[in-house]
Image: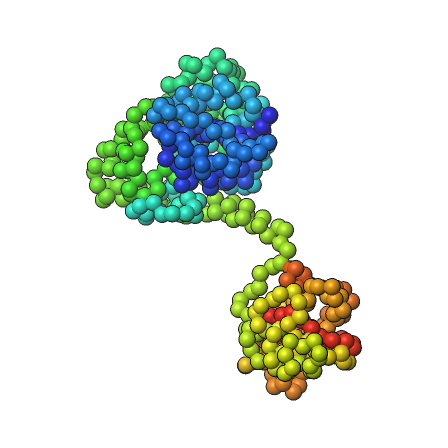
Length: 447
């Protein structure tokens, strides 16, 4: 049993299907029943194939080869899959559920009385955002301008057990994917996203919608709670695309696309102008919140800025038999080569407080120093050290001390990072071992 599912029909939606699926999965939908209405389903199927795999796939894929039979595809869902869910909604692939104050669909539904049969989400149209042709990439990020007011039609979050199966056959022509009330059991009540009754709304939508729109609390209430963000027209070229895609079957107002296309670009720009009025970034915020999870289990944070120590002159306190080169500058240069390997890149002799330093070439404000220790069998012999700074190479200031006695690493992601709250002004950066021993670092990076 799934908690919340989507039933969708798709035609020519391969470019956007993955983003659409991932978005709705991120807000808590458990499953999508996807009906492909392309003549050849293989392209769309290939795009969603990863979502169909595993013991608990996210997508159930069905091919429906008769063009335009949206009602029949959704009827198939009601008769064959509805019983597998607690709640369902019919969506198109150009429709995104925008939740203003909730992160998940479960949180949103929890705001409503348990006995509600369906929650109506009004549609708000996004514009073409000035695109003559469809841009590549994310629909969420390419279409951030919308109309100021909701449109008349809704999609419904329906409680599955509230549906009267005996009403399904007679409701196909009534657009039950908008008007869920016509298939609900007698006595069920429905609400909009504000919690206001939707009883009788579709019986006279021509009068009821303007009446709601005249209520100053209506539009704000819808926009402040939840609605369908409908990216139906993605470019001026979409009008021709709609004609090519097909205007048969029972897809709503498909016949109008031919007329609009024939009236030319000036008409189309003016026609779309009201849908490009308001900047809407909530979907982007929701998508960004999902992508931010990429940092949840970060082994090693990336550096900030440019490594200004890379290739700069370096020197050290001594040479040893294990040094890569028997020259102070040449051996010390290994630690600023920019080629971390997990081994030693330079090596001092055994002595009291051995040191290594780099000349940045000028006094610079540094924001971060990264010390890469070797990560082989002897990594533990360097635990404590100091970072000193100097503007002239003669007078040194303590910038940082690591003296906790703990091990640290390097290319394994456990390098030691010093990032002062305020940038430190220095030209020379010196690393000094605390106590006697050798200093044999892999790399030193300064940002």
